Length: 434
Image (tube, rainbow, N blue to C red; front, side, top):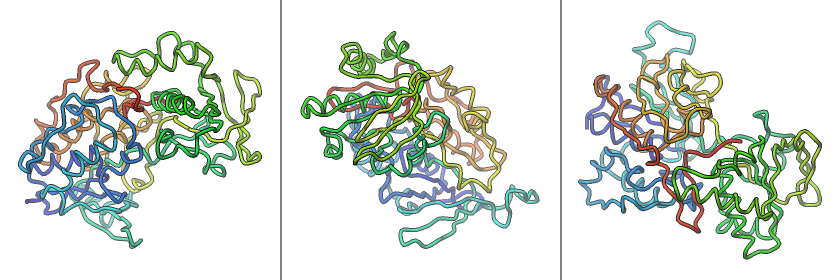
């Protein structure tokens, strides 16, 4: 396999669906992708929600370049219309792709990237910057710090490990860090592996997107078997009217069914809802959590044994401190991309395809792709990420014409899939952050 014209590989941070798709596209262009994955296996973030079935059918989850690589290995693609869980995506697709001879020799697991810079140059240095290789400083499984050089960098590290906190002001509420042992972020497996912590417990769910709805419905299923389980759903903004007026409906019929199930529970009084609720302070209380806040502007307090915070995610930009980035001040996405993904204007199905031109930064040869490229916007789709890295790989290889083509057409209802009951379902991309 040849590498880039400089003789150095392209560093790809993150071996999830988008990172491995980037490696596949680079391989098809004769470039070597040096993959860094912080987890012990590929798809590490997906395994954090391995029990969740996505809305997206397999036909939108498997990248075209990856399919071309796998075709030579005897790999059999799953049913194109079936809806996999996060765990199935990792085991049936990402693991075979990572084992491909074009990728496996260059994959580094348990490799946490600490920082990225230019060789011999800090952020303020300009002379010769475009010609200087990138330096990737990373820590291996034994805790040793290592450094690799790269011709270009694609950061596809995602946002899963940087969840938004509980507070309405973007900060953790008082006591949130101290009581983290009783707080789960995202979608815990309350009917499976995490059942013991939630059965018969008083659970507060915070958030208004599909991840929060999933958590609530899972808890309601748990309550059918464990009658002492109590659930309160807190929305940080006053969206009850919108939810009951159709916001829980959806253009995708079965995903809409997920929201409608929550709507019925609210209307029938089986699911108490607090809105708008702003938590202010958490404190230990006889083995539980005392939650203080304001409900519709008035003081309100409650007791909970467990809290699930499903308020979305944000990018971790710490390792990029020595690179020259251009980020929208609100969304923390590239400025050219931000208006295309603004959640006030777009759902995940209406974001137009985009690529290297919209994802570029003042740092030549550096790109953020995948969910991290969307910053704080919750409208990312896996298929859109594949188009991103197709375009970026073309740009890095010097094929500017291909980089600026649009090769992805998403029907309005085509990419977020649908939930086959009774398994929990999420889009893995469209979770709200309210």
